[in-house]
Figure (tube, rainbow, N blue to C red):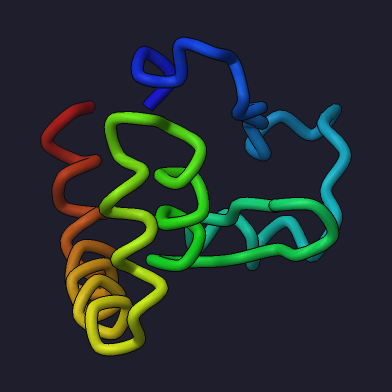
Amino acid sequence: MRRWDRDGLITFIDLTDPAQPCPLDRRLMLERFHARQGDVIYDGAAGFAAMWRAIPRLRLLGQAARFPPFLWLLEAAYRGFLKLRPILQGWLR
């Protein structure tokens, strides 16, 4: 995503670094993806959609995620990924 954010509109924060301030419970924020847009914090698929809306190439996908059935499908896919994530992380180590 960083490579696609050519205009530098997104600030990426590594919450595994304890020196970084964390607006909510750090453990909970590390369990799922989060994105903040203004004063609103999104999580899961809604967080990805918020990020996509800031990237011109992905803006249409982010806008489509405002349609509830599409966001529900994205969230279901994201939850499935979260179940596989520990396995994938093990393979990459």
